[in-house]
Image (cartoon, rainbow, N blue to C red):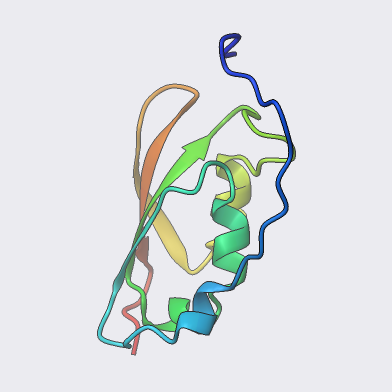
Length: 103
């Protein structure tokens, strides 16, 4: 899709879950822009999500990154949330709101 983009190497990095940061429970909005890794971030945020009412994230309806989850995969994982907006087209941004308010 982007023929001018290329990768010349590989790098191994350590990742931590969002839950490991122990964010204040007063936060209720999550903004994710992680280049196709949104679902993995959400999987590592089970405790954090207990306090989140709004999620703004990037999505794609086509695979732009290897093994990237698609919009419908995010919808399935975020079953406690309702997608109330998404950009038109094959990729863009989406907004989810919790179906019932977090405690």
